[in-house]
Length: 211
Image 1 (cartoon, rainbow, N blue to C red):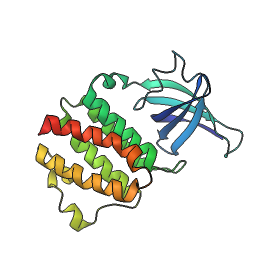
Image 2 (cartoon, rainbow, N blue to C red; image 1 turned 30 degrees about the vertical axis):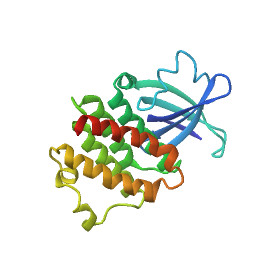
Image 3 (cartoon, rainbow, N blue to C red; image 1 turned 120 degrees about the horizontal axis):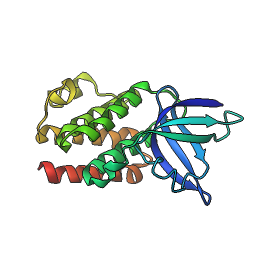
Image 4 (cartoon, rainbow, N blue to C red; image 1 turned 90 degrees about the horizontal axis):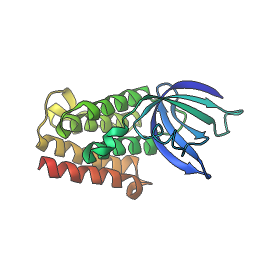
């Protein structure tokens, strides 16, 4: 296996004394895991941050072998972790993607949606600006994995959440309730406590700022 591509870092797990196993979302090959030698070093730790975009080079002798991965930073979003609300949004988006998507299957719409959401978190002046993008991203993930809302259920969502425009906090909280129930019931049934805790922290913070 040889793959060189841009990728969004989703999750990083320590492996051995100095290495790390990294899962990243690529545009054409889906979620790809790889072992980064020295991934916990002072040089690489600021690069291997969830949400960062990297140039990734995967190499493995066989398809079944965990690839060795080398990375170069393309765009850092590490500074967002200094802002608790933005950090919670980024953490949840990456955790959802890492938990929900099977490895090695392409989901270009999910990659496009995650890239857009992270850009919105980075650029929006307030959480209300990117909360709508978050709900739309959750809907994309559900739809791509076969749990999309039918027309009748979509009609229960405020129109601004599905058709564009500015949403107020009441609409945002309604949307978060709908997608949260679906994610817990249909998509994250095996890992509810582990993964949905990140979402619960985010929703609680959004309630504090948005009433």
